[in-house]
Image (cartoon, rainbow over all chains, first blue to last red):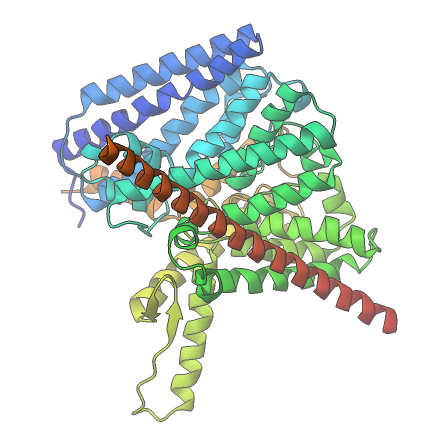
Length: 501
Length: 54
């Protein structure tokens, strides 16, 4: 039996929704300022409209709601609703820019940005206004760290039940006992990287690619936001290939790895134990799975129809895409068509595995996550040990994840449950694509790319794809980003409203 | 006056120390990346050698 949520409970959801969206509304003013800087009048008004609508919606929710405590399930539902509303609002200036065929396409782009996926339905990107292009990357940066994480930072002292919201955004680890300080560190680390990343990339673009100073800053900011947040949008339609610059590839490669690392790991390496990078089960697992996928991709690239033969080309093209897929970024140094026509099935399977595995927990990467894979293999080892030893023996399996931990049933069950949900969603999307007439391997590739928030594409994602598939991918992107629990909670909430007593 | 200067100096030293820690941490992260790239390059080298022989 479901308990119907009380009026005060629903009003609390609206209250917090309004409060966080209030902050979100002001973000529209940053690209509006950039529009002024580049003298783009129409986009300036697009962002002003976006700001006005977001502001009115946030105030409306705020006035309709009232402050109160939230149950865990309601907090999780609130996060899912927040992300859907954020998608609808951030799609506004995109749609008004005229670069999208429909509002659904703009919503797809917004959700792809917010969830740091990188799949795109934009038309004529190379002629898009700078401010609109910046907005695509900026929402990646904001939502990559987490909309709620940003909210906690601003409304920190009144955070109250916001820890559940933090969990709802697919993050469980607290770097500090206090969630406000955790949010502060996540942003501080991001800004340290922002400063270093933009500076280095701007230097490389200015001196290496001959781009003017202002444009070099613009491109480096966009590239940084999408690389560190493992997003995958680029300012130009040819992705990283546009720059034809090995140093840009190298820097973005590093930023992808940095972005896929756990924020708690950054904290430990910066302020505590430097050896954590060797000891942590997550970095070990990541290292192993990257190499595993790399071996499969090398094997695949050496099979017909191969087009890469030298060490340098194999490494530059192959390894970049393995890391791009594994980190959940989706940057490409080849054309999307080449992936579909010139990469063998084995190489595509290697990339699918890399995308499906994903990065670290409490990072901006998507996918099953390194820690869950490690727990999976540890639990297998535990089972083998149990069977090999006498039944009276007490068998324990330990792992190091910031501290020594003993593998218990709760940890294993939680990891298995989320992994199973990821696998089911991967197959579900692949099946839908296949039913719509796409080859299964390609539709499966695209489905994994959407769910694991990667953004690599074999060409299925384009403005002319079926509308139903766009909706399916939007749901997959959101479910993958929030790690399912919030989505399940929102279904639970609606079910309770309709059928509850 | 001396007390103020002293506390400012301590603050500056503290800031410098924590910046150094962050920098070292960043270097460790870069080292992990380099190690990953080198191992991958070595694996590719092995593959190519294997292919050349067989």
